Image 1 (tube, rainbow, N blue to C red):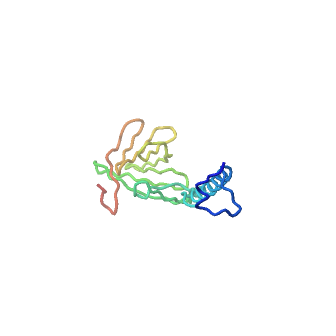
Image 2 (tube, rainbow, N blue to C red; image 1 turned 60 degrees about the horizontal axis):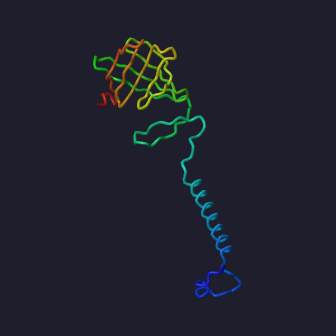
Image 3 (cartoon, rainbow, N blue to C red; image 1 turned 180 degrees about the horizontal axis):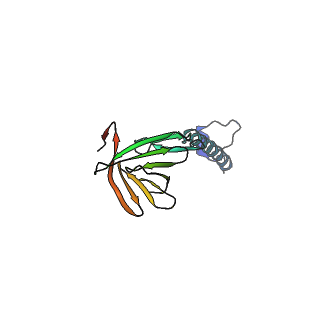
Length: 159
């Protein structure tokens, strides 16, 4: 079947405009577009974090920055309403924190799953540390011993 209306527009120079030729041409154009879209996806996609790295929230909603697991630590102090101070030391290499309570006792807590907070607990479940929206709480044996503790930044509690 020929498309006679296109004959008037295109001069005839050895190419016959048939349904078969249109299907082949369309298939070639579709393949080129598909390959171009795949190449664009590979160029613009987010790279995976390097192996052995963890993701730290940078403070901007939804943006994360990879941090190499190098044994480096991040120390944070929290001031509690009863003038008690608790400190945490986050170990980037192991995803654990060392929690120091006001009585001087230290507990190594492993990161556990939580929806919208940082949650760390001892493997036997006796000590739990939860930080959410800048407020922390500590539970021992299922009882809350410190709550509403706020992070101390530059010597003053961050409210």
